[in-house]
Structures are given as C-alpha cells and as structure tokens.
Image (cartoon, rainbow, N blue to C red; front, side, top):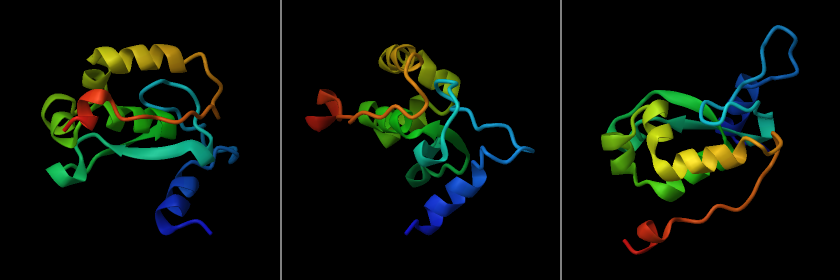
Length: 115
C-alpha cells in the first residue's frame, strides 16, 4: 500500500497521460518513471525551505550522501549550485548514460560518516 506522499508523487508524475509531458529529473535531465520519482527540497525543510524539484531517487540519495542539510541550505540552494559541486557533477556525468529506471545502492561519503 502506497503512503500519502508516495501517492501524491505518483499522481504528479502520471507520465502515461497524453496531455502531460514526462517529468524530467532537474539534476540529470533524464525522464523519471513514477516508481523512481522523489521530490527534493532545494533548501531542506529543517532549514526553512519550501520549494521542491523532481529528481530520480538515485540522484536525490546521492545529494544527501555527499552534503549535509546545513551545507545544502548555505552553499547549494539551487540546481546550478549543486551541479557546480565536483562530486555531484561527476556523478551526473556518469548517471546520464544509464537507463531511466537504473538503481544502485548509495553510500554516505566518508566525510559525513566521520561526523
């Protein structure tokens, strides 16, 4: 059974509806299947953010594996700022060649694990 938030995400990304264009990941630019859709708060809710953008689940997890919420709020409040980060830009270059439904386990960076 899908939870309330998951149902909302799936409804927002009804890619099979002819009147709607497929949702594209704002980070990597690939189309997102409903099962792999996540909404990312550009500034985390814990830091007062409200605006969200659609991302692949793997892209979303990679952002949070590399950056803390305070870093996201302070240094990376836009997609362009995120793409300027060297590790994220390297990840995006790699993931662009993968299929839309590609998934792989994401690990926290060693820098964040030490905190």
